[in-house]
Structure formats: C-alpha cells, structure tokens
Length: 199
Image 1: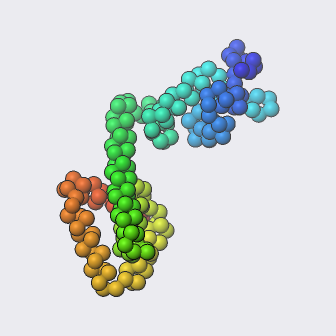
Image 2 (image 1 turned 30 degrees about the horizontal axis):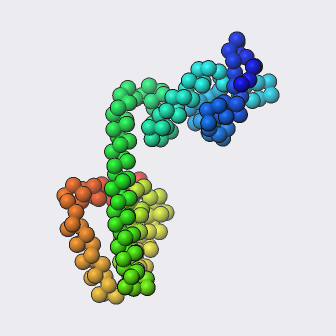
Image 3 (image 1 turned 90 degrees about the vertical axis):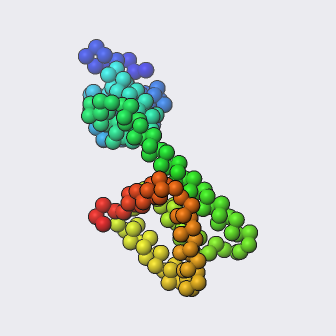
C-alpha cells in the first residue's frame, strides 16, 4: 500500500487500489468519468489519490454490481434516489427471468433448426426468420437496426414462394397457439421493447 497521506489519511493510487480491489485501472477511470467514484485528490504529478472513504464507496459499487445492477442503477442507489434496495433487486430479478425466457425460446428454436438439418441441407427461410426474431428479442433496436431487420425480412419474404410464405404463417400460428396467455402477453411486451424510441 502507498504510504503517502492526505490530511493524515492514507491514500491509494489507481494501480494500488485496482490491484487491492481486484479490478482494472481502466474500471476505476471509467467510474471516475461517470462520477461514480471520484478520487478525493490528485498528486502533484496528477495521479488519482483515493482515501478510506473512497475505498468504502468502491466496496459498495462492487457489491451492488455483484447483485447484477447496471451502473446507472448503482449511481441511483449511491445518490440516495433508491430507498428500498429490495424493490430494485426485484426489478432486476424480473429482468433476469425475462432474459431466461427469451434464452429458452432461442434454445427451442435452435434445437428446431438443428433437427431440421437432419432432413435438409439448409434451414428454410421461415425458420431463419423466426430464429432472427427471437435472437433480437432481448434488447431495444436502434432505428438503423430496426430498418435493416425490416428490409432483411422483406428480402427473405420476397425470395419465398407462396407455399413457403403459407408454411411460415402456419408455423407462426402454431407456435403462438402453443403459448399461454401470459406467454403471449410477455411476447407482445418484449416486441414492444424492441421498437426504437423514435418509432
């Protein structure tokens, strides 16, 4: 540890604190840029200097990150905007549950495509379209990604015969019919989250 002191307090430079805490110096610099963890001072040479209160704040940041909270939520907790941490953790748990559901659907689609490869050389266009839709269900698309995906779907649809289009529609209807009402509602909500904000 650094023996340098600031107003009688022991200080740590970025490299020393990073090594002691098990994070990278780049992470500490990133936290500084975000305002999550600003060093209490700088040395005459411009090096960041952290004191005991900074170490305690870093511990809280890492603990909250360990709960799976994104940095924006960590900042809200540290700034006192969140008074009930349990509610925040519950929200995160709900998001994780949704991600698991999306991953399970993707796994099911991948198994279906893999099974289809036993009888054909290449998955059908409608199988690939369905797979792409599920793959993109876990995040909001940018306007450019949304337009690209829409164009891609139109190109695939244009390349399909009327019989293939009918088959794709029937497969979609069968898959939807297998879902419970709660699953259908979750699917509608997930699709709504995909839409860019300016749409």
